[in-house]
Length: 229
Picture 1 (tube, rainbow, N blue to C red):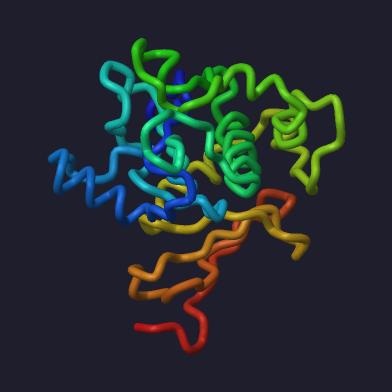
Picture 2 (tube, rainbow, N blue to C red; picture 1 turned 90 degrees about the vertical axis):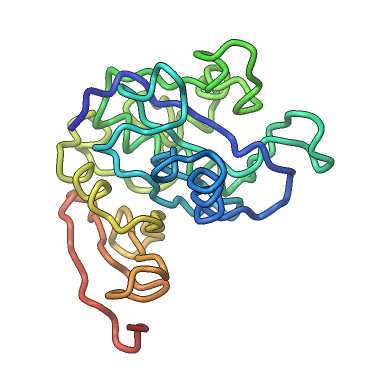
């Protein structure tokens, strides 16, 4: 695994309310910018779904001069409805997913700094809000229990709260099919649920690919009955 010193937050610089998919951003990056793949490692769509992009063990393409030692997370939005002015357009679902994802990544890379793109690239507005100020707020404290002064909103594995997350989850995220959806366990005994994307033939759309329990045990699931081949 690469050495990670930075976790950078980006926005897609698209109008408020416009539903842009990870696949669309990938197409922009490949067809319009000449990248070999999407530049971000994760994309958070407006409904809060976290989608995997470029594998974590691969260098991204999201911040000139800082790609080699960073992880890039992009939320969809970042511009007002007229697409003229930068604006923090994160939905409540996007915020919750971002904080949860940062808690997972931050537990694995506790020395990495979380910053906005504009913090390391002067002159840019991305991600259209002050990341450091946002992380000092109560919402962040809920989702990152290692620093929390209040109880988290959902059960969190003890190893995560102690900053002891090992390689297994990062490896799982790195090997997940591109476009995998990552979401909370929603009280079903799992901490995280990973759903295979529709373009992953062995699994089919919405099929649970893996779950991570509160003990951090990873369970891989077979293809569900009726899944499209």
